[in-house]
Length: 81
Image: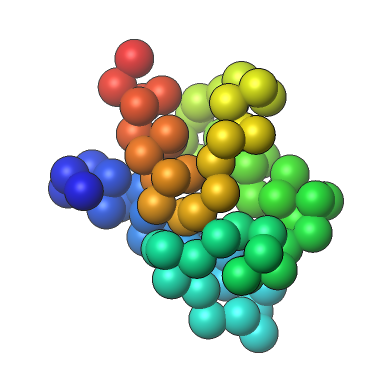
């Protein structure tokens, strides 16, 4: 993972901690299955990420993202455009 993706990953993990403070998430964890975020919490997470990094996620891209690392890579890709 590049240095920039590390920034995105760490920010995402911080946001996950704000949404679900009782969960100790790692970058390899599945956002819904392992971390246990509900659909509403995932949308909240996406909104926080979009606001933080000034990006917009195409909704069809979100269906393929499962882990924090995959989400961080998608954020980096959108920031690099």
